[in-house]
Length: 496
Image (cartoon, rainbow, N blue to C red; front, side, top):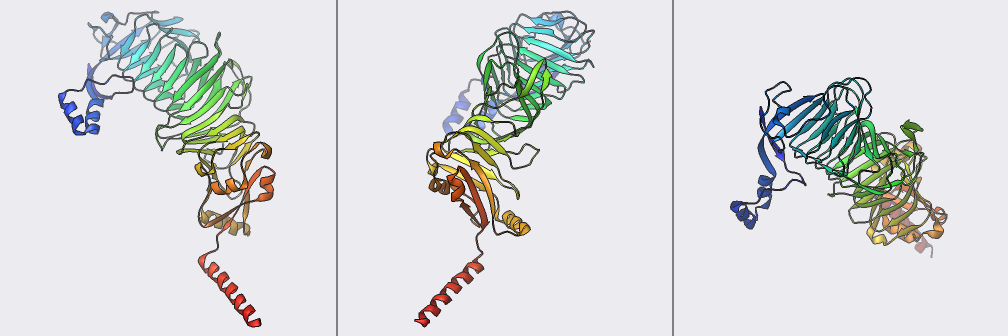
């Protein structure tokens, strides 16, 4: 049985050689249309099935495979091809559920636990030659019993041009302990509600996802505590969405998590490390488009056990280079240095309760080279950044402190409180180790033209940037004031 699919070509799949007509089109400047024609490839894919209860079988042996279904006719060809969709179903009670010495290359690869007997922890699946799917790859568990896979690939990297799915369609838990050299995913990386994914802290050296990493209320461990492992690890993802636990089990490793969002992603969950060791996770926002935006809301978390003891931990350094990063911290969380640079960079504090605005982010220092800090307001509170140490602003002309409140909302709040102004402290800093002056702060202020924003000098001298917000008088009011002044001057001249 063959199915026809139009498949997108991702970053790691080679493009066809341009023919003469395409070259002419390029010379004529019709680049976009030619590129679209190259990147849409329609092909025939053969569905092959293997239902296996032994520890191993040969990928390239046609007798190992059935056409169209698990009980279809025996396949007579070689499957080591990107024209095949491989459906592998494991049954039985073997501790070693598969070991492939040859490289596994196919379009889609679907690996399903069909049934399991006895203990279901720690079964090992070896891809000793690595694996490459030009389409999607999925690991599922339909056995009605929890299942843990020790997924090993030696020094090889898993390369998937499409999406990678763990437990998305499972009826029981599907836990993967990943111990191969690296992951390169051209599409999305989806961890379903029944899935968990643990990256080896010793074996896995690289992890990149061009699309969005979606966590379905479950766990992603960036460095599972296994034997050995230390030093820096780099993770590159196009966005983090969903909810659940983000954790680091091996605290001998430190992690540079870089976001390359093209669109908008939001994650709301918890962050913890083994024994609560801090500064193991550095975050960089470096979007692939001006519309790239990442929101991270880290809620409070009680101590818990996940093979090891985990506790809430502080973040490392946070850098915003391009795009927008909204960061929410629970009251016990802090971070290292915050740096903001680039004309198209924005940092904002996010609330930690759902879509609530207003929160406090705490940093050891702030280096502001360019871009914006956006402060969101509610009637009772505003975003706030607390900087314990040095605060350095390179040039106020390159930096914007954006007060995100409308005149309509402020007017309603003033009316409700029967006040003429409202005060909000939006920044605290060490005045002795800061180069920020009152003049610089006033130059950086950006707000609704119908709002009057005044920085309180007394607070500023004590390391607090407090803004007093009031309404700019309406034109009629201004005219009445000017008229009253003119009348007073005329009366004074007559008196003389």
